[in-house]
Amino acid sequence: MKNTLQTSLLTLWRPILAMLIVITASNYLVQFPINDWLTWGAFTFPVAFLVTDLTNRAVGASAARRVAWTGFAIAVLVSLALAPWRIAVASGVAFIVGQLLDIVAFNKLRTMSWWKAPLIGSVVASVVDTGIFFFLAFYGSDMNWLMLATGDLGIKWLMAAVLLAPYRLMLPRLQLWVPAQPHA
Image (cartoon, rainbow, N blue to C red; front, side):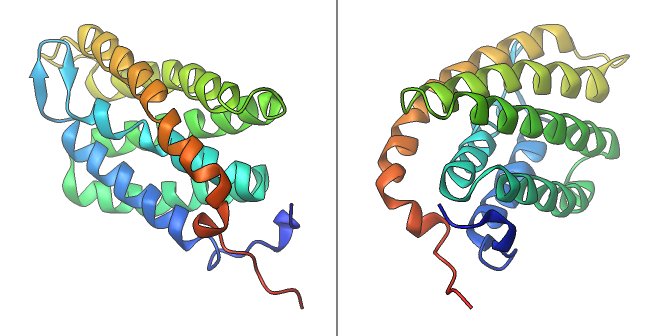
C-alpha cells in the first residue's frame, strides 16, 4: 500500500466526485417519501459508504477521511442550493459522523473476510447516521420521522448487503478507483 500521507486531493478526484454526487442526490431525494416509512434517499445514500470503503481499502484511512471531509464540504454547499437548510445541515452532521465511524469500523475489521469490514462498518454507521439525520432534519415537523427513519434504515441495511457485489468487483481494480501516484 502506498503512503497515504502523499495521496493528493487531485489523485482522489474520483472518490470525491462520487461522494459529491451521492450526497447531493440523497439530500434532494430524501425530501420525497415513497410511502409513510421510506424516502428515495435511502436507496442512494448507502453508496457513500461504498465510496469510503473503496478509498479506505485502496489508499488507507487517512485518504478516506480526506475524501469524507472534502465531500462533506462540497456537498453541503451544493445541498444548500438544492434542499432546505435544515436538511443540508442535518445531512452534513450525520454524514461526517457516520463516515468517520465507518472508517474506524472498517479499519478494525479490514483483516477479516473481504465482506465483513464494508458490511459491518456500513450497518453500524447507518444506524448513527440515520438517527442523527432524521432527528435534526424532521424533529418537530409534521413528518412521522421515526417511521421514516426505521424504513430508511432497513433499506440502508439491504443496500449495504447489495453493495457488497460492486465492492467485491472493485477489489482487484482499485487502481482504477485511485490511481497510483508517480514517486518523486
